[in-house]
Length: 150
Image (cartoon, rainbow, N blue to C red):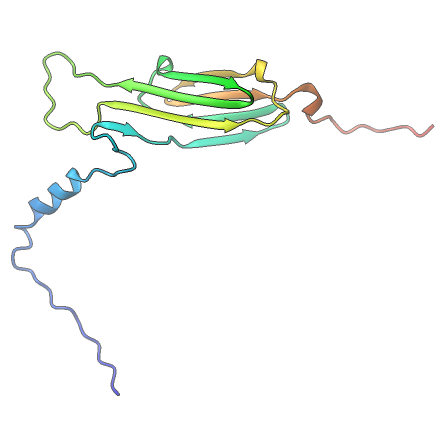
């Protein structure tokens, strides 16, 4: 038996006539995970969780929002972060294409017992929501010390 390599035939005719159709299909594709309600963008923003000796820091990427769009609360050691924002047209402008008009998400985190929930702080700057979760005193790392033998 002989192995023969076959080169596919290139169809160059009409390659530009399909360009508009292909371009339109790409732009009109609605990703189900991101656009379940048509013009509502529901996505899970990216999160970094960093631990140091004093506690944890959660960094949540949410550009385009303002601090009043967020709701952060703790109940029974569960941290809940929610955001809702409606994008409205500016007077005198008309949408020619509108793929989002509302942005919302909900994220929940089970906190360890070592977190001092009364000391949790949150801030929002440059598209990044920062949440500081301090550890309880007894859970903080203690510096190494020398013990004298008596």
